[in-house]
Image (cartoon, rainbow, N blue to C red; front, side, top):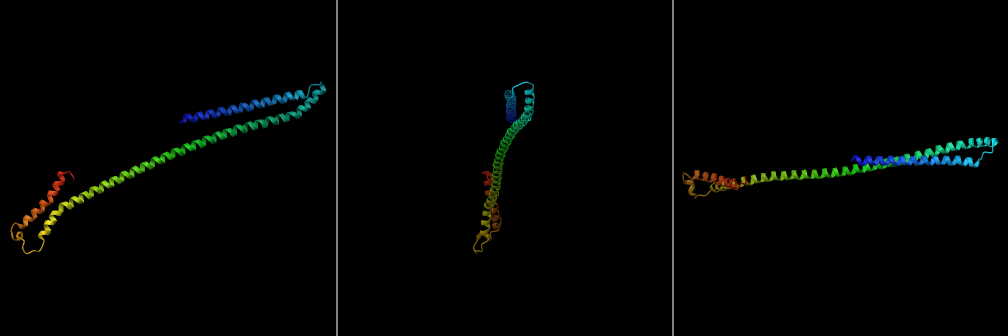
Length: 192
């Protein structure tokens, strides 16, 4: 991932160096033209011309120096502006990449949280199903003994089993068998 950034940096430095070289070449050409123009404008007429020429050159030299300084400052400003724009552009690209990465990570975390929520909800449903299944089995196991006990708890005058001396053990045995039979049936079907 660093290779494209290094490539961009190398290309930016190369462009900046190219701009600096071009500005230097323009500056050199301007100095040569100015020097050539001053020689053409002021031909050498002898000793008197040399003095005049020296005076004009003394007047022109500060202008040449000022022009060179302005040219240097313009070149430097252009290089700095290009470097600042390139740096700003790279910072914006980097920030956009970071934002995109954060958005993808947030989306991943959201989907992971949704998955964990669904898994937890599924586990809660399974646990509730097991509890309801246990209550259902308990209700089915205790329903027949309750029915038998309720029949023998009625206050009727004619109930032959009540006078029989094995009536109570028979009722208790029926209740135990009625409770164990559904339990064994559920075990055999592998519902428990």
